[in-house]
Image 1 (tube, rainbow, N blue to C red):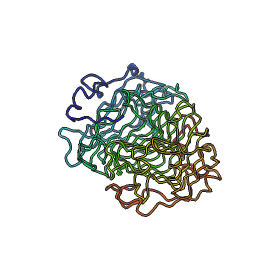
Image 2: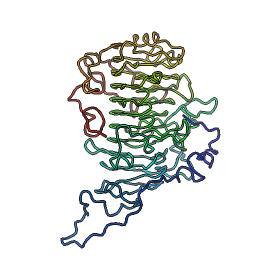
Image 3: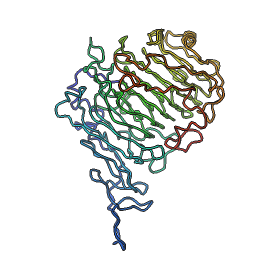
Length: 522
């Protein structure tokens, strides 16, 4: 799924973008289906003084678009204001009555400024995209997506009662259903944080020469700046996204590649992506308060030397859809000092009822290709006995995990997946995986789920003693500060419970997310 071109110069020419269009590249792709231009409706002369800020009656399209946006018609009684294909300088997407925004083709924030903040690529342009609370942006087809390049930033900050929504045209029209996936591209954010992808022979990360072309796009990520800041994303919902541009080259709901831990990423939902919900390639970004629902591949997928942390997350599969809850792997350079080694805490992963045709692709978590993960205070459950945990290869089982023992670490994890919670992989037996879990503390291997509404802790989950994060967890790991912006401030929050949601009074997911049991539909 990753692309490692031998010569950067070749990728910048027509051949690199042949799969996306002609010599103009993906940037010039405009998808079909954008509404025809509709003249602005006439307005009778006012009989009272005109207000300072014009108002739009409910259910009426705005008369025009803000400066910098193209008026491309109407949809669902709203004016469609299209973002420019290249955003440079500062662009604010304002919340306006009777207005919805769209992207057409690859919509870029800035051009690639390269791996070095002090020496940006000649001729590169940077941009800052700010999206106001309550704004909806949609795409018409799979080749419509939003991409933030290295050196540029996105500030998408909604609120708990007024989230920002990135979705499909069908969603705006109200024609989506429980299985609507892959209707537009998604969101890609690229940064300058270290990655193990694309390293030349003999080079180990972190290195400015370790850069790779992002999956689903034709832009680059990677560098040496662990604290790189790609902006702030809060209270954002991405729905009905994902698209296969070519076999093995797919757009996810959200892709974070080489994103640094100076970036804020919290209160984010991805719903019904046709590929992964969130996929991370390298970088040091930290995440918290995440809701992943109905995604058709993995809910959460990590690769390429990511060394951040993710705390407070719900991964809830769609009935009949989805593969793993988490797929965590190294990929790229598998140097002993730079395997993917994130820390997960307070997650609740729910595998729903599935067909049995692809049981080898069903597990709450799968670790592979040298991944070294640490999982604390979490719940993994399945409705139909699919395994909780799989090790796909022996390399993962035997790698050191930074905690003084072999393999990934599990502490205070409640497994509720029937009589066979552990699934063998290549040269790895279920007994070996069970022994790894036994080496941790406070784990429950064959628990009985008492989850309320499918994702809220019940008596059995809350009976598990949580494990405190060990000394040094927030110190340097892989030579870069992990779990904090400055290397000393703790990112992970100590808790007195396991799982993502302690009880009915714990409602961090409510108001801005959708699609969970008892919550509003999407």
